[in-house]
Length: 70
Image (tube, rainbow, N blue to C red):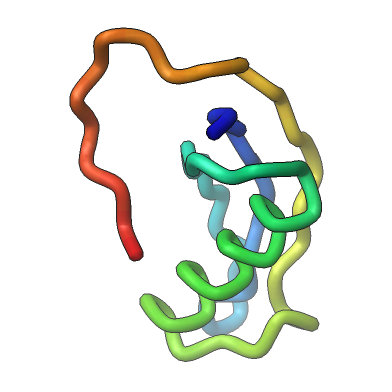
């Protein structure tokens, strides 16, 4: 699987909050869907309140043993 770093903003009350998520996924589209799911469930938001601004592909994960959220 490939790691992606996804940055964006979401609506938090009357303000906008920035986020940065690193996810492992088979492709770019699945990584985007995973971030929508994670941010939406953590903050109780629908995806139209989440704006993805930047997606970077890191490639295959190295020796890092970070936690992967299912």
